Image 1 (cartoon, rainbow, N blue to C red):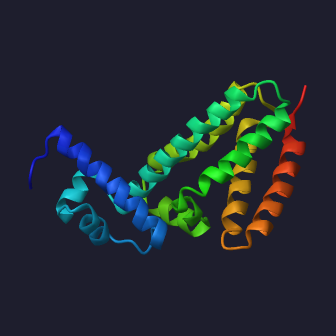
Image 2 (image 1 turned 90 degrees about the vertical axis):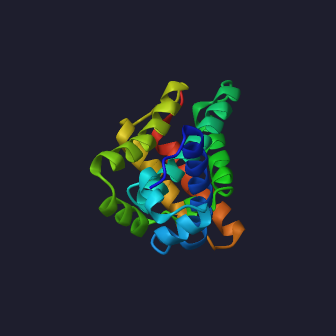
Length: 196
């Protein structure tokens, strides 16, 4: 098996991430095979396992990188709207998040079947890191002075449910998507975001 320089490792990992995102977005994690991934990345199958234990680990890595990009942009929005009420800040943040998620079709693939598949295929520790990132998003809101009427885990679950509502609406008329998300978002904000 070839040994890779650090530069080669970085290039291969980036290629796996780029090509994996395209394949997973087009076909879903269940249908994409290791053979598909290595062919797209231009590496040997044995080399894949130098980088990832399975395609599900690659999938999680891709989704987490996208989430980090989105969280960075959301932090910028929160930094720029400090003069607004907490409810309006959260409304703007989540409206922007839904628009950002449209740029990443792989996120629309995440449903309960995908989550169950990933949970069966990756270690509990790795899944825990992924789940903690969702709590980190709520923590970022708290760090920006947004307060909730419930604990952080409950708020995180509420926002995850809102996200799953968004994935459910994929493929529906854009006007319906927008209307439903706005209704749900306003209901959530009015229920759990505290304005002082």
